[in-house]
Length: 142
Image (cartoon, rainbow, N blue to C red; front, side, top):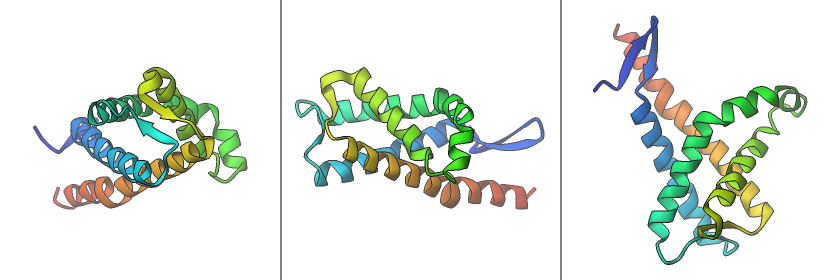
């Protein structure tokens, strides 16, 4: 299994590696937020299992529904100069909250918005500091 592959003349990161990076970064966000805010919690009977399931659902929704949401909200995102983008993450979080029911609870909308902003920041950090440098390095060695 290769980390980078060439598809139609374009370099791409392995999907499994990319999913792993996002799983790890979202888990760090959830752990950090759950220690600071009591209104955000994952089922205490099995917090690691439901936390992992929540992160899997979020990564899945980010890869499936989020591109459609971004396409539909391009005018709003453009008018707000990109400030609407965390609202898309907020929608994904609330959808995850709805899917998992009482096992994943976002009681406070402001805490959910903070998590959405942190997820946006983590997406940017993973992209800028991990994925793009790998692609540049492989491209330079071709």
